[in-house]
Length: 295
Image (cartoon, rainbow, N blue to C red; front, side, top):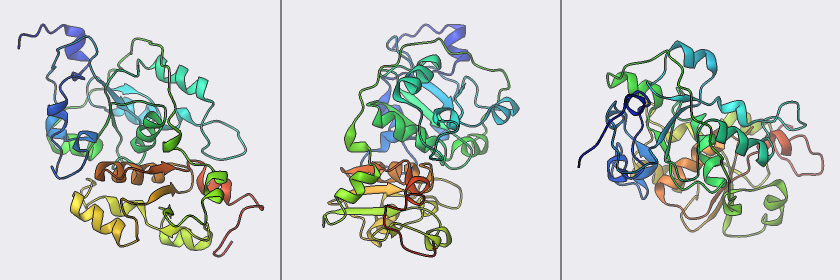
């Protein structure tokens, strides 16, 4: 294949959206959807071009960390930029139109392949992953192990900010990826619906949805901050009766940790997985909703 590389494209570290077989090589190959992860070893300074819509690399850390060193060509998009400020529910998302404008300002298009990373094993990047899938985006990938894995693999860091070309992002929300408090209440007696609370056990004990199961998000990762193998992830969730036949609703405190388990279940190919992103921040302060534990 003959490719013409421009300085702008090379400096942007843009990976071709059409080069999906390359992206599909994850740390393990037994996931149902291995294309949702990319290894640090496969994310390098090469450019694969076959079309006019290269992928976009997004750093979802804060501006201070980004300035101190980021993967060359990565665009800064603070994970909290999508959060409404001063609202009644901590961590609640901004209105859809504002999120669309934000994504467009950062050069994102529904047709572009988006690769996300952070420095916490995907804890922050996962919410952006879930949000993009909820908004109807079809091509989203996480860098497995994030910045730590990039550095461990010998990757260089840059300090120069990458300025994206503004685009117009138009979403097509997918209700099957989203849950609300009303949804959880309406399905509380459904035998095939299971609610999982992915917060730490001590936090869960202080207060939780009465019928929720505690399945901590941190168990999705190994000691190096990489996602467990498919076999290990399946065993982890199955031990809590979280199986592929279930309609799974995930929540945490403010929608971050729940999105991490959403990614884990998407890797396994579980067909019905949704996030209650307002989570305990909303449920715990609403006296009309049932609660259990030391609240």
